[in-house]
Length: 346
Image (cartoon, rainbow, N blue to C red; front, top):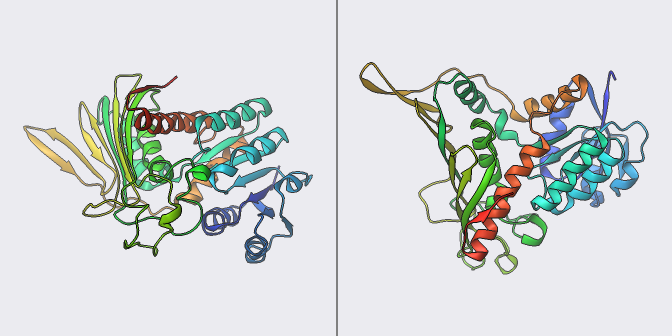
């Protein structure tokens, strides 16, 4: 196909500010339909990007005969059914991270992709930064040796979203761990070569989010209806003997926000932000700081990868199975915190 016709399900900020501009920048994609239950939101998106077809029910949009792919940019609880219906209807799917609220829902989406033989990609944008790609090249070249440990931070000091459903556990599946922790956890697993998780121990605390009189980066949130954790930590064991430690917060009494991944290898180590390589050579320990990395728009690169996989009939850069493994870890961390024991991941 010379032009891939795309529909957008959910016209909130991630769609209008990231997905739709990235699609508009591609030479072979055209946004032909937008859908949202919020009439004001979907009408504004259609006007901004000159989209002809506007829907308020995604099922009606999926009946549009010239639709080739959809981007699902809804809250987490609205990922599974639109994704399954689109795939079963013969439409390629990009779904925003995380793949779903939990691994059971995520597995339904992965199974639908297998049934349909259509492409499924989960929008894990942090894989596509210049820094991540540089580290991946280092790992693949063997510069760090065997990666046996990773530390993951997705920490905000007072970064509780004051809009949307981010603080509603029923609709999101969790708080910072599933919302921003998923980014850095996915990055760590990607850099480590996607080892399979076998067990996890975790703990989640709600000590700040559900109490009044706090400072918020985006204004005060609705603490009365705050049902997610504001801090979580965990330890993950992987099938190759490696392990991961993760910390994630919306609100915590820490020095500063931190979004980072650190790798420990037998020949060297690395950190994502600020990017640095640690090693030794000629009788000295060395800190190496890469310079002149290219400036890239990670959303443009991410979306280009999805459409290249459609055009070339190749595996998408972020597969449903990879995203499902991340979701299994998150499920296990939450369950471990509830039950006070290590959870085996199958």
